[in-house]
Length: 270
Length: 187
Image 1 (cartoon, rainbow over the protein chains, first blue to last red):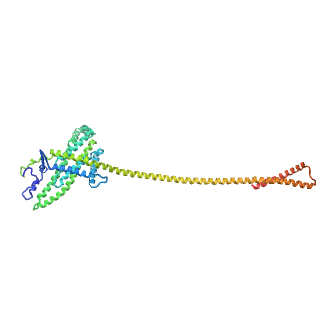
Image 2: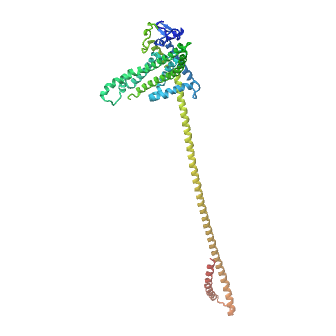
Image 3: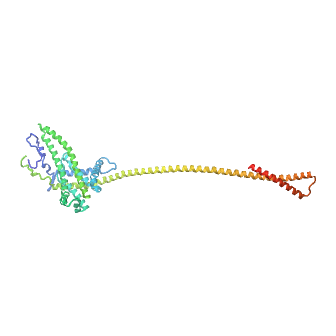
């Protein structure tokens, strides 16, 4: 067994309970794939393919849904409009306010791109959420913070924004603690937590599903293990439903926090 | 699992992989610019149009209602006005009718009075002419009678005239009193 061997290669070789094979628990190795193809030093891997596929699906679906919009919506336009109105009326307008409509395309792209990448977890064959690789949440956070800070600096100037994030009416001796904390919050903690929250949720979700899927396969044998295999199969179904919820929820949380940060750049000060 | 399967192959999962990061940014940029430029402007415009259509419809309905109310108020006002006018016309007609009756009565009175006055005048004239005729006849008869009584013909014309006049004056005085009493009775 080489260092690049993953649980899947073990399973393909027919590793079952009682076949003299230990439980091939999923590990970090399952998040690192051998490249599909390589161009020089650039290795194109499965998460990249999944991210590009997600982007393509989002583009194609909404292009199809909105290609000939009708005043009285039909078919896919209904679903597309539902998404658009959800972003506009539940996220952009309540969080950002009057300027909210300007950010609808950005928040819309963010939500549906992340959701599509998350959904890949439960799509057969893909079965891997691109967002469980931290680079993808990180790229979304980079885009968010380019937008958020650009807007904040445009509105109030860089130092103006840094001043605005400090609450007013606080005694001077508290300011000594408060100012570094607030700056740290805006400049480091917010982007970092935004990124890690999404990554960790999807990472854990993939681990959980993989564990029960492997267990179902591993425990399938002519022994009492079959009973546990059935239990694991049920868990896979339950967790798949649970993951569907988490996928939508994490996309929503990421987007609503982004909207909130952008809103703060407009109406800074608590 | 052999001891060689240590964590060697697994890098820190919290450190983003460079190529993945760049590809992620690229993928997001594709999604954003495609949706921003191609897919979303149409639906945004459409939603605005729909809002306008709904609001326009509501405004139109409101306008129609206001118009209906205005017409109703106008109609009510006109009805009240025409009722008022009718009442006025009736009152005026009544007043006019009363005035006409009064006028007719007045005219009738005036005519009656003029007829009565004319009657009086006629009566007086008749009486006067009758009196003068009678006077002449009476004079002649009295002279004839006197001639016969005296038996001689009074030749002196001037004397005769004086006697007649005196007689007639006496008669006149007597008849005048009677005539006035008669005239009083007629009126």
